[in-house]
Amino acid sequence: MPSLQPKSSPVEEEDQPVRGAIREIIPEVLYQRGQILTWQREKKFAVFKDLGIKTVVNLWPKQDPDLAESQVVNYLQLSAVRSEMMLESRMETAARYVAELCQEHPTLVLCEAGKTRSVYFCILVVSFLQEVSLREAMDQVVGRIGSVSLKKFMLDRINQRK
Image: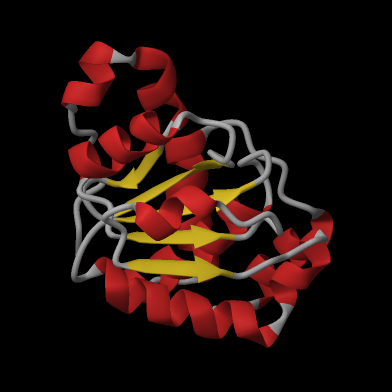
């Protein structure tokens, strides 16, 4: 089971606002934030290189054309226009697959604001990756992110599942 201890990064030292915006859920395994579509291409690529990110999961409906030219190996566009879409079975299937990819290389999960959809998806991934309940995974993820906006229906699902 991957450790949840924080790891210092060269990007952290050079560019605290950008590095601070990339939340380390499981160091060297799983990262989370809001969209990066508006970031300069070079900044995105530098962060990907520094963190070794090879998979990006985008839950925001807007696709990022820069990712087609990056060193990202896997780009998963899982559009969730509304937060309710996160409860669809395709999201659990995708989270199980992403958990497998996380064992190969670091993964970044994105959504628009980085407070709801990407947080919930990370909870699913951590649950599968570490074989823990959704509640235990939520405690870990929220503990790493801090301020989140999970919806009541998401919390109900988390509390229903073992």
